[in-house]
Length: 124
Ligand SMILES: [Ca+2]
Ligand SMILES: [Ca+2]
Ligand SMILES: [Ca+2]
Ligand SMILES: [Ca+2]
Image 1: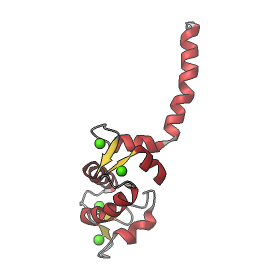
Image 2: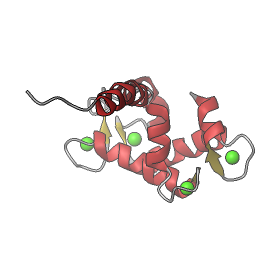
Image 3: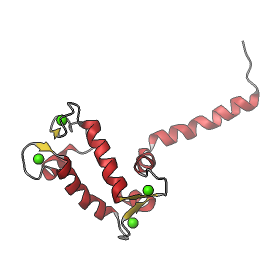
Image 4: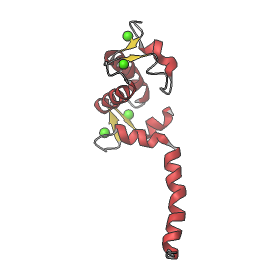
């Protein structure tokens, strides 16, 4: 049996609760994922790109639009009818863009055209 030096055992014991904490709180990760240039703010372009990436993740049949069943696993599928502006039962990228424009403006509390970490946190 290999005995680990005490310092390594301690380091592991200290490190794991911190790692668990990060995993339990997805909000900063999402923020980091959206902030592609790492300047601590999510501007409109980054936000749109992030929304499109999320949309693509849900578009399981890759037809470029989201059906009701494809968004069934989304955090808030009840928004479907709100986003589906033309009521055809599918969400197009244009409809998502139009919807997230409002979302973005609502989150950008100080109207500087970017969402910073504090503004994102308020929204949670
Ligand atoms: Ca940024
Ligand atoms: Ca689809
Ligand atoms: Ca539609
Ligand atoms: Ca702002």
